[in-house]
Image (cartoon, rainbow, N blue to C red; front, side, top):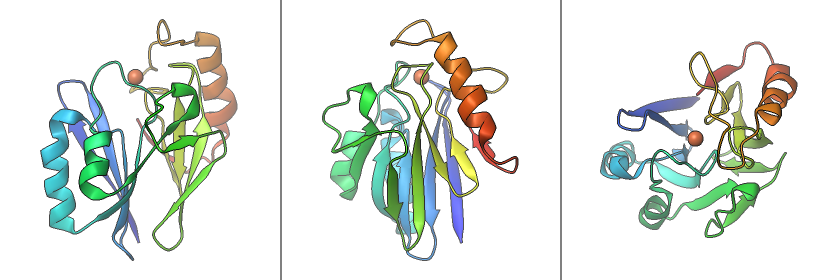
Length: 171
Ligand SMILES: [Fe+2]
Protein backbone atom coordinates (compact mmCIF):
# COMPACT_ATOMS: atom_id res chain seq x y z
CA UNK A 1 0.00 0.00 0.00
CA UNK A 2 1.45 3.30 -1.15
CA UNK A 3 0.35 6.87 -1.11
CA UNK A 4 1.24 10.08 -2.89
CA UNK A 5 0.59 13.20 -0.83
CA UNK A 6 0.61 16.47 -2.75
CA UNK A 7 1.26 19.81 -1.07
CA UNK A 8 0.97 23.17 -2.78
CA UNK A 9 2.89 26.38 -2.22
CA UNK A 10 0.63 29.20 -3.50
CA UNK A 11 3.48 31.73 -3.59
CA UNK A 12 5.70 29.91 -6.08
CA UNK A 13 3.00 27.55 -7.43
CA UNK A 14 5.22 24.62 -6.51
CA UNK A 15 3.91 21.15 -5.85
CA UNK A 16 5.78 19.13 -3.25
CA UNK A 17 5.25 15.39 -3.08
CA UNK A 18 5.52 12.91 -0.24
CA UNK A 19 5.75 9.30 -1.37
CA UNK A 20 4.80 6.90 1.42
CA UNK A 21 5.32 3.17 1.77
CA UNK A 22 2.67 2.33 4.37
CA UNK A 23 4.18 -1.07 5.10
CA UNK A 24 7.24 0.51 6.69
CA UNK A 25 6.29 4.20 7.01
CA UNK A 26 9.37 4.96 4.92
CA UNK A 27 8.89 8.01 2.75
CA UNK A 28 10.57 10.18 0.13
CA UNK A 29 10.01 13.88 -0.48
CA UNK A 30 10.26 15.59 -3.87
CA UNK A 31 10.78 19.35 -4.32
CA UNK A 32 10.20 20.74 -0.79
CA UNK A 33 9.83 24.52 -0.40
CA UNK A 34 11.65 26.45 2.36
CA UNK A 35 8.60 28.41 3.55
CA UNK A 36 6.68 25.14 4.03
CA UNK A 37 9.37 23.46 6.12
CA UNK A 38 7.50 23.58 9.44
CA UNK A 39 4.25 22.41 7.87
CA UNK A 40 6.10 19.50 6.30
CA UNK A 41 7.88 18.55 9.52
CA UNK A 42 4.55 18.63 11.37
CA UNK A 43 3.08 16.29 8.77
CA UNK A 44 6.07 13.92 9.00
CA UNK A 45 5.85 13.86 12.80
CA UNK A 46 2.10 13.40 12.84
CA UNK A 47 2.29 10.44 10.44
CA UNK A 48 5.46 9.06 12.05
CA UNK A 49 7.24 8.91 8.68
CA UNK A 50 10.87 7.96 8.21
CA UNK A 51 12.18 10.16 5.40
CA UNK A 52 14.83 8.28 3.43
CA UNK A 53 15.48 10.67 0.55
CA UNK A 54 14.80 14.28 -0.28
CA UNK A 55 14.90 14.69 -4.06
CA UNK A 56 14.91 17.64 -6.44
CA UNK A 57 13.62 17.43 -10.01
CA UNK A 58 15.87 20.38 -10.92
CA UNK A 59 17.49 23.53 -9.50
CA UNK A 60 14.54 25.86 -8.92
CA UNK A 61 14.51 29.53 -9.85
CA UNK A 62 11.09 30.26 -8.32
CA UNK A 63 11.59 29.08 -4.73
CA UNK A 64 14.27 28.07 -2.25
CA UNK A 65 14.43 24.40 -1.40
CA UNK A 66 14.17 23.16 2.17
CA UNK A 67 16.07 19.97 1.27
CA UNK A 68 19.14 20.84 3.35
CA UNK A 69 17.17 21.60 6.50
CA UNK A 70 14.85 18.69 5.93
CA UNK A 71 17.80 16.29 5.67
CA UNK A 72 19.27 17.74 8.88
CA UNK A 73 16.02 17.28 10.80
CA UNK A 74 15.03 13.87 9.44
CA UNK A 75 18.38 12.23 8.69
CA UNK A 76 17.35 11.78 5.06
CA UNK A 77 19.82 11.83 2.17
CA UNK A 78 19.60 14.49 -0.54
CA UNK A 79 19.44 13.23 -4.12
CA UNK A 80 19.62 15.65 -7.06
CA UNK A 81 20.19 15.39 -10.82
CA UNK A 82 23.88 15.31 -11.55
CA UNK A 83 23.69 17.92 -14.34
CA UNK A 84 22.05 20.44 -11.98
CA UNK A 85 25.41 20.87 -10.23
CA UNK A 86 23.91 20.93 -6.73
CA UNK A 87 27.23 19.78 -5.36
CA UNK A 88 26.26 19.57 -1.68
CA UNK A 89 23.71 16.81 -2.35
CA UNK A 90 25.08 13.45 -1.31
CA UNK A 91 23.60 11.51 -4.22
CA UNK A 92 24.10 12.77 -7.77
CA UNK A 93 21.54 11.05 -9.98
CA UNK A 94 22.21 9.92 -13.51
CA UNK A 95 19.68 8.79 -16.11
CA UNK A 96 18.30 5.37 -15.15
CA UNK A 97 19.55 5.43 -11.56
CA UNK A 98 17.31 3.78 -8.97
CA UNK A 99 16.67 4.67 -5.36
CA UNK A 100 15.10 2.12 -3.06
CA UNK A 101 13.13 2.70 0.11
CA UNK A 102 10.70 0.78 2.25
CA UNK A 103 10.59 -2.93 1.55
CA UNK A 104 10.15 -2.94 -2.21
CA UNK A 105 9.81 0.64 -3.34
CA UNK A 106 11.86 1.75 -6.31
CA UNK A 107 12.18 5.24 -7.80
CA UNK A 108 13.75 5.53 -11.25
CA UNK A 109 15.42 8.77 -12.33
CA UNK A 110 14.69 9.76 -15.92
CA UNK A 111 16.76 12.57 -17.40
CA UNK A 112 14.26 14.90 -19.11
CA UNK A 113 16.29 17.99 -20.05
CA UNK A 114 14.74 21.07 -21.60
CA UNK A 115 13.30 23.24 -18.82
CA UNK A 116 16.84 23.08 -17.44
CA UNK A 117 19.73 21.03 -18.76
CA UNK A 118 19.72 18.84 -15.66
CA UNK A 119 15.97 18.37 -15.18
CA UNK A 120 14.79 14.91 -14.24
CA UNK A 121 11.45 13.17 -13.88
CA UNK A 122 11.02 10.48 -11.28
CA UNK A 123 9.07 7.30 -11.89
CA UNK A 124 7.52 5.50 -8.95
CA UNK A 125 5.21 2.55 -9.69
CA UNK A 126 2.44 3.99 -11.89
CA UNK A 127 3.38 7.60 -11.17
CA UNK A 128 5.71 10.07 -12.79
CA UNK A 129 6.78 13.34 -11.18
CA UNK A 130 7.87 15.70 -13.92
CA UNK A 131 9.04 18.84 -12.13
CA UNK A 132 8.58 21.72 -14.57
CA UNK A 133 9.13 19.53 -17.62
CA UNK A 134 5.33 19.60 -17.80
CA UNK A 135 2.93 22.16 -16.37
CA UNK A 136 -0.87 22.18 -16.42
CA UNK A 137 -1.69 22.93 -20.08
CA UNK A 138 1.92 23.69 -20.82
CA UNK A 139 5.55 23.12 -20.01
CA UNK A 140 8.33 24.89 -18.15
CA UNK A 141 10.14 27.83 -19.69
CA UNK A 142 13.30 27.06 -21.63
CA UNK A 143 14.90 30.47 -21.95
CA UNK A 144 17.31 30.28 -19.01
CA UNK A 145 19.17 27.80 -16.77
CA UNK A 146 20.61 26.14 -19.92
CA UNK A 147 17.09 25.32 -21.10
CA UNK A 148 16.35 24.15 -24.62
CA UNK A 149 13.00 23.93 -26.36
CA UNK A 150 14.36 21.25 -28.70
CA UNK A 151 15.54 19.12 -25.80
CA UNK A 152 12.24 19.64 -23.98
CA UNK A 153 10.28 18.50 -27.04
CA UNK A 154 12.42 15.36 -27.21
CA UNK A 155 12.10 14.68 -23.47
CA UNK A 156 8.32 14.92 -23.65
CA UNK A 157 7.71 13.08 -26.91
CA UNK A 158 10.48 10.49 -26.74
CA UNK A 159 10.63 9.79 -23.00
CA UNK A 160 7.44 10.81 -21.14
CA UNK A 161 5.13 9.78 -23.99
CA UNK A 162 6.63 6.26 -23.93
CA UNK A 163 5.47 5.63 -20.35
CA UNK A 164 2.45 3.33 -20.02
CA UNK A 165 -0.95 4.94 -20.69
CA UNK A 166 -2.13 4.35 -17.12
CA UNK A 167 0.76 6.41 -15.68
CA UNK A 168 -0.41 9.17 -13.36
CA UNK A 169 1.37 12.42 -14.19
CA UNK A 170 2.18 14.68 -11.24
CA UNK A 171 3.36 18.14 -12.29
FE1 LIG B 1 11.53 25.23 -12.61
